Length: 492
Image: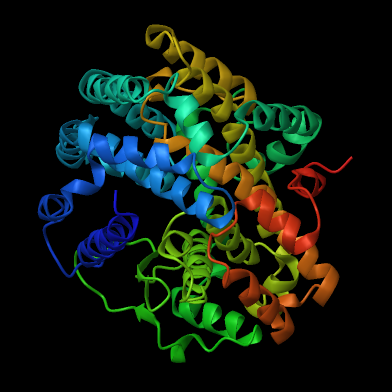
C-alpha cells in the first residue's frame, strides 16, 4: 500500500463528504448525494485496505504508529459503513417518512422528542412514546439488527474476536478498566442522585425519580421556564463577546465562516463543519433562543475554535482523525459556560442559581445513563452476545442507573457506531479537568482572560495527535480521572 496516496485520498474524501453534509444541513442543497463521493473514493474502504493497514499499524510506534492506527480505524469505520449502507439508507428513509398517530393527529417520527419537549400534557407525551416505540420495534429494529449482525461478522472475519475487541484495539483503550471507573462513578453518585434531581423535577411539576416516565425526560431537559434569560437576539453576540475575552475575534477569523443566513430547510440546531482543517471551518447557526439553543451553539463553537486553531503543518490524521474525546472536551468546555455561575452573572446578566441546579440534574442523569450504556454496549458487542436477550438487559441496566423505566425497544437504536460512548464519557471527565485548571491558573473569570485563550490555543494547535489520556498527562501532568466531575456533581 502507498500510504502517502491513501492519506491524500482520505483527506479529499473527508472534505467532500463534509462539504456535502454542510450544504445539505445548512439548507443550500436539497438532496444529500453521498453515493458519487463514495464511488470516487471506493478504494479507501475495501477489505484489502483494512487488512493492509492492520498489518502496517503493528509495525510502527510513536507518532507514526498513531497515524497508522487512526487510519486503520477510519478504514474500518468506512468498510462497516459501506457494508451496512443499504440498512442505513432504509432506516433513514423510514425515519423520515414514518408518522405516529395520537388521538387523531399525526406527528413525524423524528419529531416525537421535540413534540414531547414542548408538550405540557403528560398523557400525550406518554401516548407519543408508546406509538413511537411500536414503530421502532416493528419497522426499524429488524433493520438495525441486520446491520449490527453484519458488522459483528465482518470484524470476526477480519481477525478480531469481535466488534468490541476491534474497537478496543483501534482506540487504544482498556474498556474493562474504563468500565471499572464508570461503575465507580455510579456508586459515588448514587447517594446524591435523587437529592440533586428530585427538587428540579418538582420545580418543573414532573414526577420524582421512580415515578418519572421516559416520556417526561425531553420536557425536563427542555426547561422552558429558563428561556427568558437566553433571548435569540443575544445568541451569537454572547458567543462573540465570550471568545473576545479570550483574545479571539470571531468575526475576523479568516478561516471561520459564520453561517447565520435564514433558509427554509436549514437545520434548527447549530453545528460545526470542518471542511478543511484548519483553513475552512463553518459554524452554522439558526438562532431560536432558549438555554438549549445557547448550549448547542457554544458546544459547536468549542469544536469550531478547536479545529480553527489546529497547526496546519500537522499530518492529515492528527488534523482530522484521532480520539474524538479531545475535541468533545473542548466543545463541552464552551457548552458548560452557559451553566457557569461567573459567566451567567458577567455575560448573561441573569440569576445563575436556577440554571445551575437544573443543569447539574440533567448532567447527572446523562452521566449515569452513559455509564450504564458502556456496560451494555460492551455486552452487546462482546464475542458470543445473545442478541435475543439484549433488549431486556438494556432496559434493566439503564432503568437501574437512571431510576426511570427505560424502554427495551431502544436497545439497538440507542447505540452509536464505533463505541463513541467512550468518547463522551472521557470528554466529560477531561472537560472538568480543563475547567479546574483554567480556574486555578486564571481565576473564575478565565473566559475574560486573553492568557487563558492563549493557553487553550496552544492545546488546540495539537489537533488530536494525542489521545485524551496522553494529552492531559502532557498538559497537566495528571492522569485522566472522573474525580473533579464527581466532586462537582455529587459532593460528599
